[in-house]
Length: 475
Image 1 (cartoon, rainbow, N blue to C red):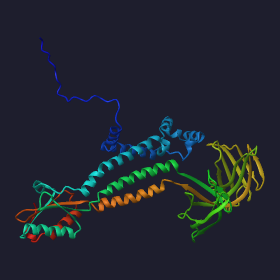
Image 2 (image 1 turned 90 degrees about the horizontal axis):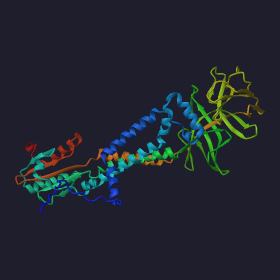
Image 3 (image 1 turned 180 degrees about the horizontal axis):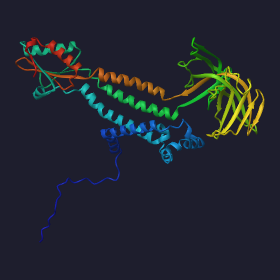
Image 4 (image 1 turned 45 degrees about the vertical axis):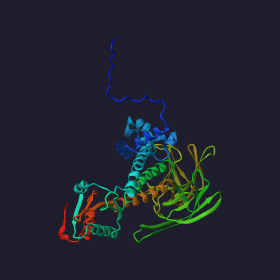
């Protein structure tokens, strides 16, 4: 009968693969992925690269890619600069980097990595603070990074107790060594390392605040004629400018300008306040900031069928090259540049009669006008496909309405970051193991980084413990 020979492998036998992974196993794998330091480093590098691209590549104004017409206009305006890469960059979302899917994904993964590393480290911090290792070997005392040997003529137990009294006086915690009655563990600032957890939480909140602000904040610049009002977009709120006062120094430089604003909600005056540059008015989660002021032209524009294109104040923000005229722009049409021109303040040499205005209409991006027509005050004038009515000039106040739901998170994160850094660097955890032998030789050993501050603390404690300074030696 032939003998059967079987070859056996030295590798361990693997358990049969399971088709289904248990939820607990899946959670453990995800957790292990996020607290992996290599993963964290890669995500930090990716975040830095994306932030660099976001800085170097021109970013589209907020909301541009929500409107296909505006998006196409923006891409055409940057195509001469980026050429064949324009469409690639647009597809990747690099023109709106900080709200792009790739940036938000990396931010979420990095936040998960920070949380994973922090959660993984918390038990170690808790164990070091609440259940530290109190017993160490004699070899540890001989080879510790920071060690000192102090001798005394006292009895060993008395000398050990006096050393404890020194540490207690300096507010160090004392824990007995349960394996050696002539040894103990002492530490100070045991909760200091938890500052790193607060700092990590701050970084997560900063990223969350940035994402929330990018996705849900809005900003609207409002040109409000004094005595008039402007609607806040997509709301029932109107902002009325009741008055405006500006002050100047002897050199003619503005030193203060203040608007008296009233918030009107559903036709009811809700709140009034003087608004300065650093004193915004807050209502319904929106802050109204004083931004600018100047002279505006009140213009009413309709299409030939009566559809209103624009009805409000046009800030005369620019001056013509010869300085004789003030120029403002109506930005209601993407395909047209519509300019309103009036005589500059104090100038009598303008070709435009005082008290009237001129409208100039250009194709977007072109210097060749489609129409140039004078607008006498109070008269409706047909210009191309539009009817313009110049209703006169008035002082305006420029108000920026801003809603930023990420701001509270950023404030909380800033506080946590300051507190965390203060705890980490201002109160580092100091640990010392102490033991005495039968000859009253007191050994003190520590593995903490021996910086200049700790060196002074350590030497001061030794000076208080030692009875005879000349008998103190390095171990």
